[in-house]
Picture (spheres, rainbow, N blue to C red):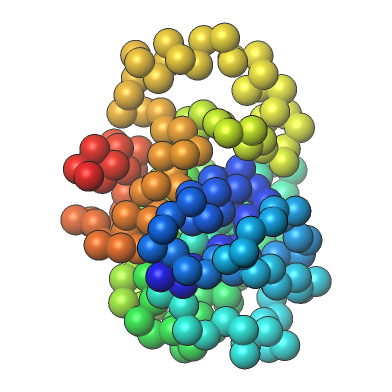
Length: 223
């Protein structure tokens, strides 16, 4: 299996990259982003693009892939709806349109978020934009597309969020995270589990296209 990862330097992207590099059935992992990940592995290739809105110079290196894990994301805090829409909806769908054209047999997994509004009409701006993004992706001519809606994610294996406030939050909660995982197993996933779930949908699909935390947990436990 040949896998593309967008956003491999973020917390979820790092987990997808780690699990892909460990998977024996993944022969090539290619990251696409504005900076390199810093990882070293024989089956890792990195493509650095200063502008992810323009993939024209990289199209030759974006075909022949079985799956794409799209892990690019920004917080809506402090952003106008116009700016957040551009960085979320426009960026994601622009990339996806190119990949669907180059790889019609591809499985596309998009990391959305718990609370996303599929109706696109709710009061929460970020949830509406995410919902519009999901709905548009589900209409694209991929072999399959899956919307990942994780809630609370516990970082493992040295993985950290790029956002400073999140790193502080996880540091404060670190002593009680094991208790939270045991107490709320269907509400909390680890970075390792997110990466495993991505590989599962790439290999054999899932019963539904929109996957909440409980659905992702069920996928993992079905192995």
